[in-house]
Length: 259
Length: 319
Image 1 (cartoon, chains in turn orange, green):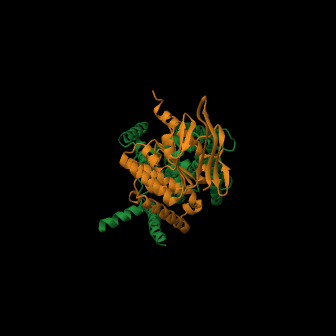
Image 2 (image 1 turned 120 degrees about the horizontal axis):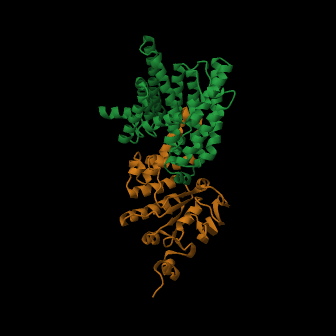
Image 3 (image 1 turned 135 degrees about the vertical axis):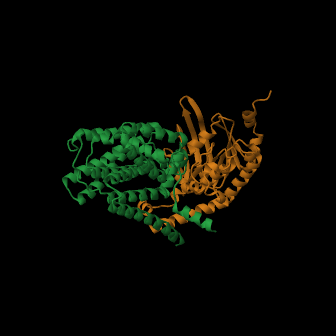
């Protein structure tokens, strides 16, 4: 399997505070990797760096584009997204006053073209493109049982479904990597179990790389093929779930030193 | 092909409504039920509709709070005034129309590129300042006849022209809102960071909405100048921007139907209250305050009238 994302010695300083120091990581195609760490370890900062929401102080991020790894340095968030990096947010960021269907259609924006003149004068080809993309969006929603809520406003959905819609919206972008920022936050055990199944299903059906930040250890240990542990902005450990569970440094970071 | 047929039906309905409106107006004038006073009121309402629909696109759909609409209106008005005074012909009028739109696009780009990075109230102040700059430039130029303004502008914008152009600009704006571009600008309004994460160049789309809104303002300005035949820089001050904003807010931010309704209600209110002299502004203001207290989202909120929904509703009723 080829490397799809390669991060080398990433550093981010906010004034005098080093939020992320010297972090390196690699993702392979079709892999499900988790990024864990105690509160304030810098996990979300790493996510924001990877998706271009903020820019790094130093270090490189490279992303596979066909045969080459291209640098994402100095690329804007929307450019990185168009290359194939979809993400969800820790505190859900749906387009609240738009319908479920419109949320997904917005994510598909870069997959179809409607000329300005064609759309304002309603050429027949406008209706054809519109119909095609609607069908595509509906099919995607149907896979995740969201088609019955298609015309509801996103803000009227229950919390768990909003989380699901945010993930589906990310998938609608046809990404190569999906970044999930605490997808199980605020969920009860039952909803978490649903989510675990959902993420498995996504991986199987869509063949994409998933990187997730999570606090819920049952979810992480169940799902992840590999785990990175971040503590105080530094990469503490890397390994399979069982390796991480045995790792002394990780236990110390989470539970403190003995006696 | 079924899609085309269904949509053709809805579009035909709208077309019939517009034609009916036109002939209704025509007959009423011929019968004498609409005198020049009422005609004047109606044309003012229509021009306000063009202005407010454009501003609603910027504020309600793209979520960018602009207070500079009157500036772009002034550009259209003065372009038409200057060109039609030089070449008195209907051709000159249409040319002035196009030229006004082009200047408005350029001005909107110059204003929009630096200011659309700002958010909320900062953007409002910046656009207000830009409109003031436009007004002051006009105030100090020779070709615009300075603060005295321009008069004896040849009248080419008769009521049928204003009516047709109002219909066209509304169709264009509504069609834009209900297409890929419209969904994108709404997503930018809802959450810029999330839109950015969907691969959307938010700056580009905000600018697109801003420019489209500015163009409609220029169109309305051209019609205003040509219909009223007199303009002065003070017609396009901050108060004009605010009165357009009032129409948008009153009708419902994000509802084109609401904009129509509010423009009509305010237009009639304005005319009816003319007999009250200075008291008129007090009553007008009180009516607005009351409405905002009891219906803060405006008359219609974000509700839109849709023929498709009406049809579906009737079908369900009959089944």
